[in-house]
Image 1 (cartoon, rainbow, N blue to C red):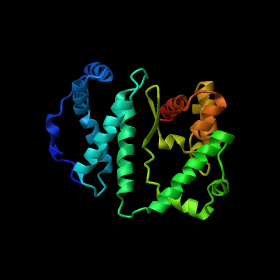
Image 2 (image 1 turned 90 degrees about the vertical axis):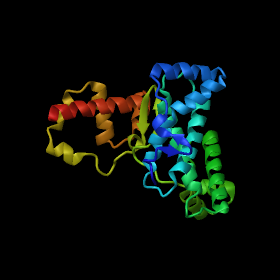
Image 3 (image 1 turned 120 degrees about the vertical axis):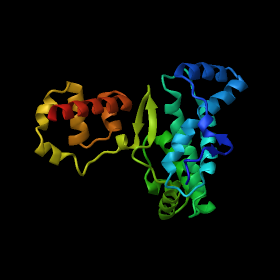
Length: 258
């Protein structure tokens, strides 16, 4: 996929406008007030964001123009749905929207087509799962989903697997107050809890220098093997705060050990 083209979909990428953050904020407020001219300008000044996102899909055989068009759809959806009252940068909100739109396109246009019946089965299972969780406040088993929709559990597992698309550990999944959480932040490591690292380095000394809450988070994450979401629930703060405290703690420990 050629991404070094000057012109994509009739847009001269070398001449895209560059606005300051203050100019973008002012323009976005006008967009939310219904100013169509401001909306078109805001879309145009954020096209570089779309270009940066489609570079992540450089290994794809898809045409760059096609991905750019799909990315623009994600950008427009982000603009239309963005809440200016939240303490979140527009780019932080928009990037996952653009990525999601492109992933859906690649999934739906994959050379290995997923049949309509498989999609229907998968969507029925997803809907049944969400309904069950709202009603019972817990995750249903595959068997419970199968009983609910009257489809064999093997067919459900196959259908759900068929509609999945690969995800990078560095894909953004959530934003809270400007702090972006990535897939890797939600993955626990119960098999390898950094025991070798603990044995080989003076880790305990480094941990003793941490604040009590940071030390507790490191213990839960790397000794107990818990996810950031589990840690957040246990100590009563948001997952974004856990992520930030964990990264600060690891940075401090690395600095001490170095």
